[in-house]
Image 1 (spheres, rainbow, N blue to C red):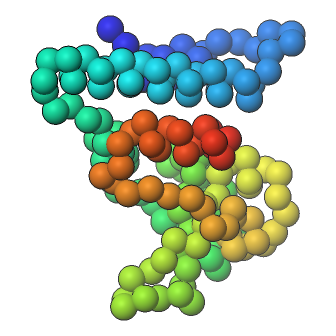
Image 2 (image 1 turned 45 degrees about the vertical axis):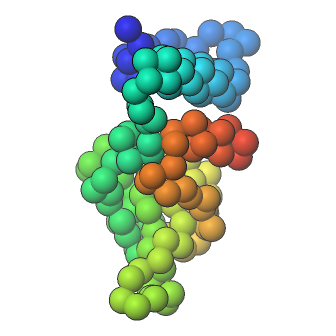
Length: 149
């Protein structure tokens, strides 16, 4: 039986070998995952059962958010203390009817490769997003198209 978690653990535990291309391996993994999910959806259609996997079925609901003025040290400490690889950055200036807007995202890679003193200077701004009700296949296609890992 296909399980996403076991596949991720297997990919992450595989030691690098000479000539190994990490980006290609990740793209290959996402392609295989999309294929398996499509097979699962096709099985559901064959059984005349409505079984569309949505983003909301797989997403993390309670995420850690920071604001744009959070210092680099605080970002690093928060990520390491909670063993996180990504943080959402909210826009303090762009309040819309009392709701903070998503300004960007910071990954562990952003933190190690970019210079800056605040989250605003480090983050990847204008992130792409989809609705929780979107089919997972659409989300995977978006991720593959934009080369998001």
